[in-house]
Image 1 (cartoon, helix red, strand yellow):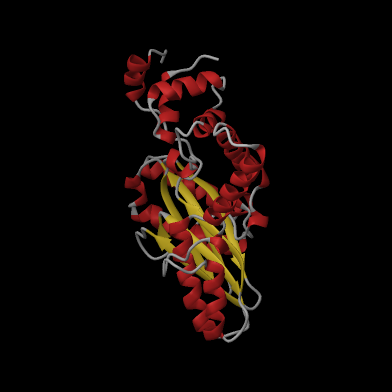
Image 2: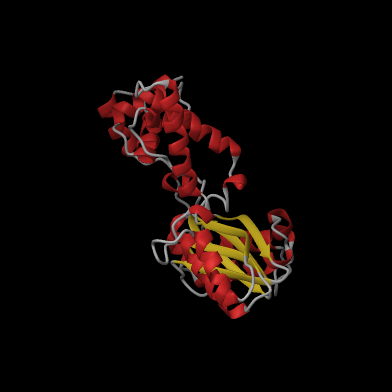
Length: 309
């Protein structure tokens, strides 16, 4: 497969590794970007690449709450300028409220009637595209509910109430004091915004992702020349550390920098006066998973790396 300058630049932006190493990684993996990242990582040249580091899409994340339910939506635009447009902000805020009845179904949400208009949500966005002059897209939605407890939310980099760059929802089930439970929920939401957990616990992690991580660590250990017995212990030790970094209950609570989140929840039961169970969280970061458009810098990469553009 032909390795282009754009591919080299994308891998470089994702990993921070030099262009020549990126070019070699792509050549070794026949241009497979994910495999090239793994190839670099097994050689200690790149840290775990996070999709959030490789994406850039503008717009807003919107949050709406109603009683023991809350919904999140992401509506994308081409530039941050539009995200600061009051009309766009009003549209996203309205869509977030509608999402409370969409049950996490983005197609259903897109077809719902838009208040004060004869349009559906998707048609209203199309009209806004014509007026504002920039492409927009209703990308995703999620809803969180509890039977007895609280759902708390947090918006990071908020441009106004319920609208910002990162939106968090946290569901806590408990029959205890709701004010104390709410205070804990807000702290957990801020923690999730900062620590970026992938799942509540190890059991909820994507097993394909876990298998991939284990394979990468195994290759790294093999190159150390250790015996099979020691190598296996090293792999297990590094996997434990990996789980501690990506599962919410095992992470160190950012609020105090010492306590594990699971212990912080347990400790909070004294104030709440009843057992607490964290049943779900949602974290929407603007632009996750949307690839950034290539820039003219690819030509500079081509000149340096000696590849075709």
